[in-house]
Image (cartoon, rainbow, N blue to C red; front, side):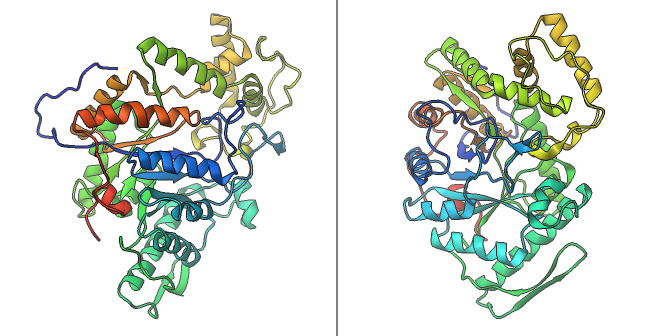
Length: 445
């Protein structure tokens, strides 16, 4: 990590740009360590209240909840190493609306298995009850395993996900616009192969007009949906060069839709490890990685590829010497990316070669090939310098933090990194508005 901001004057350099921060509280998965003694419950409202109030103290823009529409499984059983049974995101955020006054409240909601009129009504309700602090993180899914919970199965082909999503977003925006015009008796209609709607708005608008639209998807379809409709994009392109390339691509797409280059706030997802020294931060990052990929998780990870029960294998021993099943990966845990669902036999061969070459055990190999490495590891001063560089060179507008341990991952940022950013003039010292749209410095509707 560079020690100082690269402040060389360029046409895109903005010396007054400030960092926007949100927190992505994942719905399920290994990112957030919840099995440690003393870790807070992921179904208790007190956990979410404590996090939201901490973020409000840190002047964050938004608290962003992930969501899973089905409990993950492994080998046909509930995968109990992941969080299971977390309540609905809108319900959780509605409970937080009355206990906070500034923090934005963003709910991940799926366009594939929600009805447009119902979803628009629930999101508008959160926006109204929070006095203009709601946001919608627009996501899609293609797997039949999730769809089975909705009696749909694999009804929507992967290539049609964003076609359906665009229709749902356009329908919701039309309903919200009708409410803003005072025309709640005006019927909004849509009649396409993937979205059929005939409905009227039932909830009046909040002070920000409608929920802020977030989009989390890096495919071409996701980028097009962002350029056409989103206010904020939750990007996966966190490394500096990738962030620069992503920002340039998105801004070129915005121009094609007649939108200005700054119409969308770009907030890459980021894991952050803050230490008193560089070594302290690196040691902490290593510990977090080891906790995220524990021995039981390592075995479960390989079971997806071998297609069989590997519980008899020692995670500190060599890779299984049995042959994997012939079939491709089972996506039933909901964790397998589209591009990784084929070619497992070739992947296993590569892993065996790597393990033999470096004498890696099962858990060591899985930590090597699966663990997400935090892109920001260092002292608070170093991280503040780097974040300031990102926003002032317009590589990003800020970051959506993915915490790894509660509350320490967030208190380190609030108590250590935020003051450093404020010293650089790169972060607010007080909220200047009350709505999420105002926090994000988005233009009024």
